[in-house]
Length: 207
Image (tube, rainbow, N blue to C red; front, side):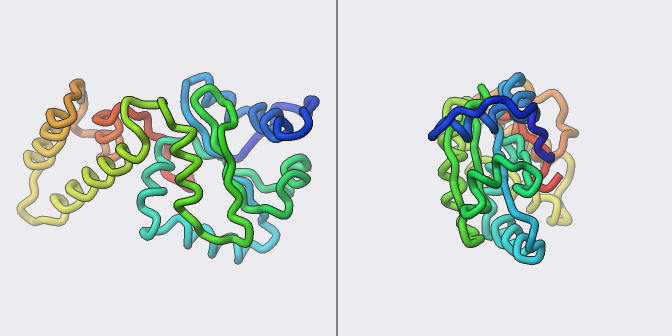
């Protein structure tokens, strides 16, 4: 979703300037009201081709772990050209990712200056922001998420795969993780694993 500043306000100086500004964004505040973690992605769309290539490098199969982690966060996108404060703070550092915890507090930020698609750097701030957000750590969730999705996909590709096998996979994972309450086995696999891991999943990246 696109960022919507709540209003001009009086920003604090120093390290608190960014927090004061971005924590006031409507999308960040709405996510916080629901106890959801958020990720603000600030970019410069002046060179749209460079931006497109960067996003393709960062958000590809080579960054499956990062893509999986993004599913836990409410992703907010902001073109720096549309926000004077963001431009003044980060113009020479773009693109920048800023992570917020479930209370809407700015936890950490990471600049990928020069459009270097460093997935590990972005993942590091996601882990910090998600600490204590769910019953398992973000790295553990990502590992279980990828494992479940891979097994699910294998069953779908296998001609002998059946609804019974898929349902059994879901049930086995629930038992193994000691979790109850899968109400609807007709859910999409991403939603199923979200229930298993006790994590609310957001929309696909790019939505």
